[in-house]
Amino acid sequence: MSHHAYFYAGEREAGIAKATDYAHDVMGLSSGNNPDLIIFRYGLFSVDDARRVIRLADQRAVGGDAKVLVLAAERLFHEAQNALLKLFEEPPPGTTLILIVPSAGILLKTLRSRMLPLAHGTMHISSEAEQYLSLKASEREKYISKLLDRTKSDKDEEKQTARGEALRLVEGLTTAVYEQWSKTGAIEYQEFLRDATRLIPVLHERSAPLKLIFEHLSLIIPKDLVR
Amino acid sequence: MKKVLLFSSLAPLLVPLAARAEGETDRPATVVVEGSVATNYIFPKQAIVVSRNPVVNATVTWNQSTDFSGYVWGQIGDYDAVEVDVGESFSHTLANGVNVHSEAAIYLYPNGSSIPVGTVAVGVSVPLGHGFIASADAQVYRGGFDSEFYSVDVSHAVGVATVTIGHAWNPRQRLEPTYAMVSVPLGHSERPVTIGFSGFIGAGHGFGVSASRRFW
Image (cartoon, rainbow over all chains, first blue to last red; front, side, top):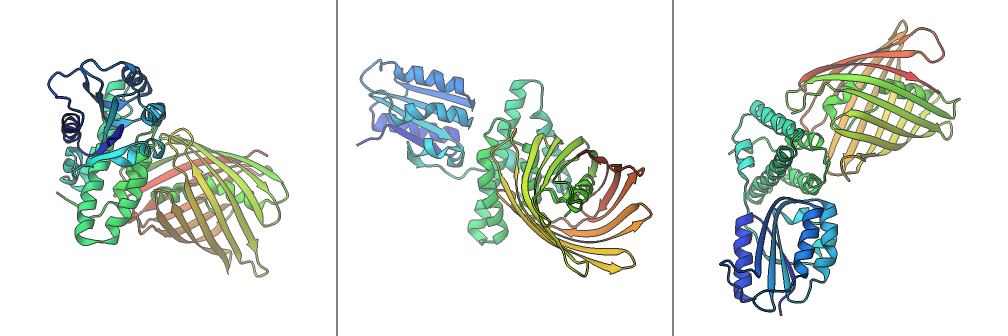
């Protein structure tokens, strides 16, 4: 028996591929221009986006009784997640929802509890983290400073793009540290992971104090972590 | 007890907190209100943030008994965050002049996030004779910014000024600053403006200037 709401935590396009496979294999929906398999890609998923999705979910399927909505978001405001609670608790009949996020840690427990994992995402070190780890210490400071400056841009699009990069950087660093911790079990890696997993959900908040977070993480990141 | 911010690289620069220390020893008032303006220049070796924004602090302390007091400490102007710390502190001076103090607090960032940071601190100050006072403090932070901060310092009155020299360690953040602070009250009024200067080396380097005053 199939569930009505799933999430995939990992790289976005891989998640969309899993979602389309699910729609095809379980729901019988093909992926080629199928109006009942709707895929949305978001940088930042806002409350307005949530409202649009809710309205769309209320519409009947075009070709049959079933439709699948795939929502792939890099960041979700907590208010937006709260707005989705009712929809994910009880979607309209025949509607299946698949939420794709970079990591499950960004999901509120209340929303997370309404979904089943679609599949386990593969470990992915973001290009932002790859770039950061390839830099010398002094260059890393400049990289972060520039990124933080961009998060204060007067242009909203630039600001949101930079915040998305900041999130991917921390998530990528966390993945890189996790890989090393899996090999060595070193306490330094474990301690970084403990703080990073607490702080990643905060990065999804509208006014997350990035300076505070990046200063701390850049101070405690294991010294030998380079690419 | 001197205020130590979450970020230890800044700790020596928190001259405004000299004002809070004054409040803590000024027990006759039930409620003490203090404010300060400060600016810090930090040239970090490891820290990524060059902080030079002016910050404004305000503290309300209410003395519950001879030894216990509660406080609310707020700061705006740096880190893109409003910080509000709510805490309870204990300070007791023994017969030989030795002071033991402790504090438990929660740091909140009401405009920026839902991160609450919990902290517990303990310390002791010992008179060494000839006007010198030695202090040792330890503080632990938990809640996503986990770290420990230890410091030892010696202070001495030079005229109306108080000079403090110390060393601090934060092993988790790999910071080890040596710092100096000078606190000078201006004038002889009941509530003078106190000017503070401070600087540190060893975790990058930096300096700070502040002006603080008790209002009530």
